Length: 526
Image (cartoon, rainbow, N blue to C red):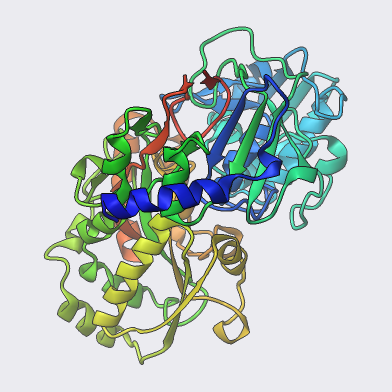
């Protein structure tokens, strides 16, 4: 979009944004935010969707939270004690914790919440398997009796994706296969259910009963979460021009994921700031369904690697400014301790469409239909999907390109049914870089089949190497991580597309926005 067209839509977009439900009481501090997509699924245990994760961390608190160095710190717990050579962990809840309905947070609430979470979460499943017994021994003490040491217990309970939300026991007893109907947590904001308009608006108000931690410094998901605003309103604006114009004229304060073509224009506005807050960024991927043909064949999956130009995918997502993306990226966050080049020769000479086509034929591809599901309302996923579909066609895959919104795609990819019963073959996604710093929490790198994350790859070798990593130290860990990446290039739990950092754009009226993904504690508005 050129400047003239951009300015032309500003006035009409501003008019479209004016709505009675944005009104607030005199003197209230209100932050209006444009999220990456509509909040279709509210229950964070039910989905890995990042928009739901962001919602969850407003409403629910977590027992631990990772700081900006990706180290787990106590959050709802005052601390923990480890006994019996690492086989007993006693977690003590800090004083003053209260749910939004006024009831105190008790250890039994946390126990029920953990059990519901680990019934669905892949890393949580590791903790469940390592636990002999999990009990609330008093109102403020939670005890894990372990079968084997699990030193990553705090990280599992405080990781930055697929979070473990603590909710009242009566809600946490809802089976993990069913949606929780009420959004009652103990986090810094309350969900205002009667002001939610699906596809348009989500509203939160500051929880007056929230007691921040008394010690430490606020850092990513950890430390004192002090709220300075009265309300946060999410406005769902899938059209980039409308979102940009609304930000221009002050109808919204913060746009989570501006499209790259509009970043230069927004950066020139003195009353706006364009900045990468989440330096962990994202690792792009094509996720293939390992349960249905043709991608149940590992040789067919591997054949695609030689056709992938990571730079082409990342340029589609973030434009030509290489400050915002990196190619030649494997399965771990570039720049993190375990990033490595093992197996990266699979991309040598890419894109080589002729080779990929020959390799597909040699692997036994017979022209089967590929159902490719695409959310058009998420710029990064839509952009990657366009490039991927073109690549698929160039190497001879028969692509059935099915578009919808992100909420619909999220529900679709949960299906393990065959293609003729509503199943799927491929979709583009990204994993937070903070979740890809090691094999422990990298759920998309797992090989546990139907018990894993959408796509359901199975790899006994990856799982054995990961298990060895969890108990290894020092140089042994680095060796194992290289072995994991080498094996992943063979088993292809997903096809890596590169790394990108997504800038946010926000009004200069806002200050003290936390680093990391979008969180609203600490934010001040002039």
